[in-house]
Length: 258
Ligand code: IPD
Ligand code: CA
Ligand code: CA
Image: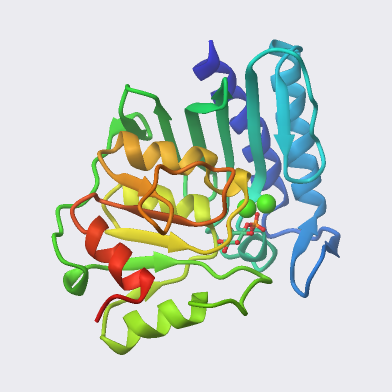
């Protein structure tokens, strides 16, 4: 039932995203320069919440654009109605709907749907991960120096010790490719699909990572915070890899390498 409702909710949000993509829509600014929210973000969140609420009126919802509901039961749906809003607003097809479902505080299922590239990633705890219904696995690389990585930069919080720019510079100066796609949910799913060997980011919100981190784990990868502790989407720092390069990438991020 959770799977069916996740699919229906993601499809409802994705229909809004696809409907607005490439068209004219209103854009407003949130806190910080270029931290945007569009008419499509609101329309997608509304459509997603309508589906969840219709099937599970007693479940809680944590939505990025304000659509949160606090209920009694132990289920909570964590919703990013468009991850990659700046891409979306610039007609760059790297944007998606991302929804994770928590039961008693643990993520048990997640979906990331990019209707522009027609890619739907899905995972359920203990059941593996899929891309368009086909099983996916992380890559086999064993060394960071031979890896292709991806990261993202927060809109604020750039000035901190061992900042996003410091870590990026360390890797880039060594000649290690580090891409920046602009959607943390897609970054995570592309690690799960073996397109990237690792992803890290300094400051994510629960809706950016809740679905994608489970998809990486279920594809055989590893996800932790920057100290190697078990990951929770309710803290900001994330390292997600194929598992094999994980200890070494942690060292790069912590400044213990090169
Ligand atoms: C953003 C994207 C981006 C990440 C930012 C997020 P949004 O989400 O995931 O990749 O670097 O930290 O805020 O604003 O497009 O939903
Ligand atoms: Ca996001
Ligand atoms: Ca968003």
